[in-house]
Image (cartoon, rainbow, N blue to C red; front, side, top):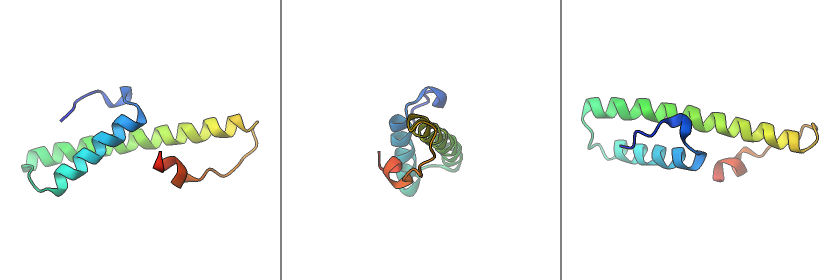
Length: 79
């Protein structure tokens, strides 16, 4: 498992690692300790991705001259 510091990851990299963790855990091949460690890293990756999405939403609002416009979260999550 990649141990790149999460804070240094771009959204796409963090999401790809999260998907790999989920896939590995679904396969049921991990021992208990490895499964716990994977879950902890996965939760940290989720928090990191959520923070980046929130930041992106804030940037979009600023680009629209301070006018609030609802952001389509499905569009952001698909990226």
